[in-house]
Image 1 (cartoon, rainbow, N blue to C red):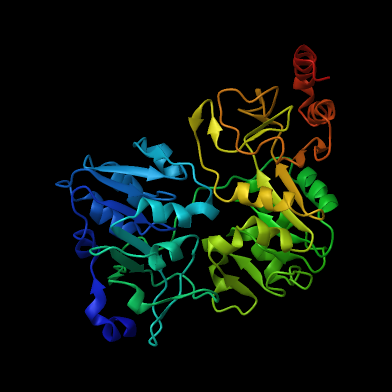
Image 2 (tube, one colour):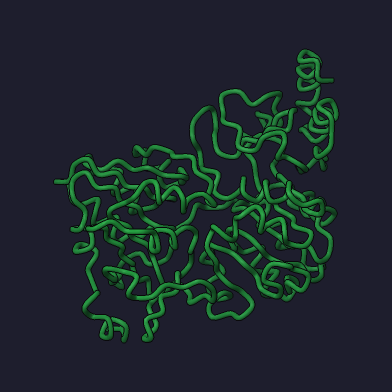
Amino acid sequence: MEAWQHVFADRVLTPEAAASFVADGDVVVAGLPEPTAFLTALGARRELAGVDVFIPAPRVGGVAVAQNPGCRVLTGFRTQMLRRAGVPAEVLPVRLHDWGAFFERLAPRVSVIQVAAPDLDGTVRPGSALAANDALVHRERRPGDVVLALVNPIVPQIRGEAFRVEDFDGLIDLPLEAEAMPIFDERKKPDHLEAFVGALDELIPDGSTLQAGIGGIAERALYQLGHKRDLGVHTEVLGAGLGHLIETGVATGACKTVFPGEAVFTIALPETFDLVDANPRVRIEPARMVLDPAVVARNHRMRCVNSALEIDLWGQANSEMIDGEQYSGVGGQLDFLRGCSLSNDALAIHVLPSTAAGGTRSRIVTQIDRNAVTGTRYDTQVVVTEHGIAWLRDATVRQKAQRMIAIAHPEFRAELTDDAKRLGIV
């Protein structure tokens, strides 16, 4: 038994006891990453009826809840695990920066977040993610509202915003045999990596502050920028690429204007846990600050590198749907795109392979049709494929189309050109 379990014994709960707080008709919100043991116990309560459960990025626990006929899962991000399980979940499109205000409106009766092991002085650090968990803990509660923390013993102790034991109505003790490591979607090694490394090398000068979305191209290409000097990190998710730049001293943060000398993030992936644990050069902060476009814009030479599933000749980007069906979610991408638009020395960069489905489909399309537009033509500034760089910022409609065709796969350029002529944009 850990020391914190003795000191705060009056607050310790099992996952099953925590799930017993939920009653018919309740609204429940799980934080990020999902508190799996709690959700698994909730999924087992088949006597429940009419329970809505918002899970930002469902994993094993989210699948268990979705399989409970008495529960309806709402989510901001359709994950790989949901797709593979084929379980129902309704997508609720909300930007990560807005989750705090959304939680206020949703007014859950039961909220559960994951945290690191409490210090004996009562400090509770958020573990691998803060995101909008602070809004769940600190929002104004109604009589009967319950806020619980699932204590994960293996997540890091990260400097930055923290909670207090007294903020919670109970501390869920995670059984050691339970799945303790946060689970994220698999990321595949991209093709044509060297072409993307070369493009990002050109677009990211020394002293830039970096944000990178989750995805093979951004992560792996940034990993290769070890020759750069005094980069900074201000990002939603800290993954292997940015983590490597911090660890090797490339990302010193010396030129940053928001928390200079420190890497700032709101989610840390498991491969960075050793790096961020008690590291004075990093800090975890809530999404309301990290993803605030006005804060993003204050950083020196902000460079935001994000992926897209397809981009059309107008510069509209789809980052979340395939063939009219929700594939993933938007996370904080829009917040960083808007932050870049507020600063003249910032740059929003979209990276994507030129083709999909084994080279049979072009990711540069004439016009987004069945899928949702994630980033508008006013948000998209620079697009990179393995065939080059398309500068769309300050370009006319005709120039956008011509430049997008130029970085499409050669086999699709003639068709895209004919379509552009038919539409009268070239």
